[in-house]
Image (cartoon, rainbow, N blue to C red; front, side, top):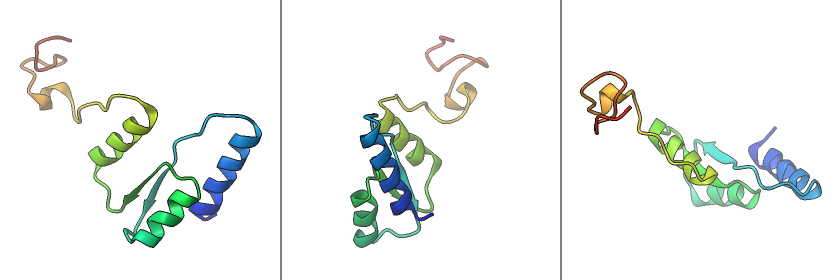
Length: 91
């Protein structure tokens, strides 16, 4: 099923059931304005063009869900001095 059709169906169901909108991120190979407009008109919450970097997707999801985006990688990769600790030394 095409993204625009499925997103519109989700939005109709949410309205009929009085549900809050579910975040829908369109991941397409097209970055042209016409495609982005189609996705947004169908009810998508955001649009990202492929290829999508992992951090970009995580940030988009965090923004749409109100969550704080976690730093990528394990604590050791973020500069922690001991495994399992954040750079500030706290677990």
